[in-house]
Image 1 (cartoon, each protein chain N blue to C red):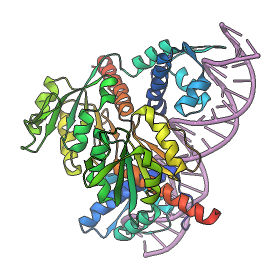
Image 2 (cartoon, each protein chain N blue to C red; image 1 turned 90 degrees about the horizontal axis):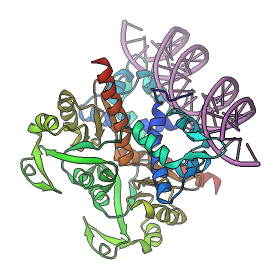
Image 3 (cartoon, rainbow over the protein chains, first blue to last red; image 1 turned 45 degrees about the horizontal axis):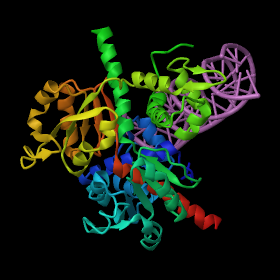
Image 4 (cartoon, chains in turn orange, blue, red, green; image 1 turned 45 degrees about the vertical axis):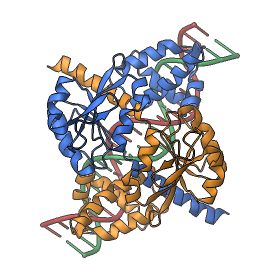
Length: 217
Length: 217
DNA sequence: TCCTGTGAACCGCTTCACAGCT
DNA sequence: AGCTGTGAAGCGGTTCACAGGA
């Protein structure tokens, strides 16, 4: 059937992967790509790819595959990547600094337009071509700079307070690196990246591998 | 029933969350905690908490709740966090540097014991109390330093080659920040953190919110 | 013949609802 | 009375298998 308005969450999370593979393919001068090849390069099942893409509409050609350039445009449109998005970072520690300079953001159309910290010694200092501002100015600057996505890299204890201000300022997209569970009203999207948690999960599988080794040989 | 040997993947991914909440509770001198409160603080459903914890064994007391300290020990044991884990970082860019100094790792018992880069200008330079080593030494140092978890923060094009060496060196736990899909043999655990992908996912929901606003008012 | 698009089966996980213990 | 532990139902997502168009 045709394009549907509600795309499953799991599909949305994979579209950026497909996009990355397809953009590489453009660089390799590929004109079409089968669901099979796209699946291998994205590390998923081919039926998965076809079902995911069917949610955007029938953009493939039977017997041939998908038009690479056309599909890139469609995914970009679906993800709302057709115009640059303005990003702010709250919390200018090592991680915040690294993220502010991360090339992967700029390459994907995300422009960091403001940075904030609560530490008076950091406020006013430079970071790249930005000046670090006081969190007290958070609300006004977010509005004035038309920020649509905010990256939170504060200490855990400060994160919820910051997020409350962000929500009050109308921000609906938050990427949180603080190791704490955020409470937000419906309609606000939060993506949580917890580096400690990732290592702890790996630790579990590492331990399983050790145990298996002991048992198996 | 009693403790089971195979814990569902989804449960494993939540155990670190529970651990964080419970450790906070220890700091607040709490002795027991109900699944209801633990659920609220971890941002999940109470039945979820009970089912998850039932995979570790019957550690709760009906009518009372879970013994906080005891549960902390059990989760730590399950996740294999009872001893420190030795970590290496490959790729000393801004992100690699930030991660090397990240306090959240040390606080959770992950010790960064080696760092590598391919750039001769970085090799030999200091990073914290470490000296950056050449990726050519990757295999030997991994073995000599008994590294069990490796964080990959190289450019995308280099990541697969690095991972092939890691796997050959016997590493079975990898945390990958390079924006590329890694191919690894069975038995090797990879956690993928892609910052660009996270923002692209948020972009989708941000767009949905804008559209809803247009429609709704 | 090749490869997409999709109903249907399947699977793992989540949530409900309540029996059972304290 | 309160809260855990868990069968059973419900749900979203994945994979299969194949009809159908190029």
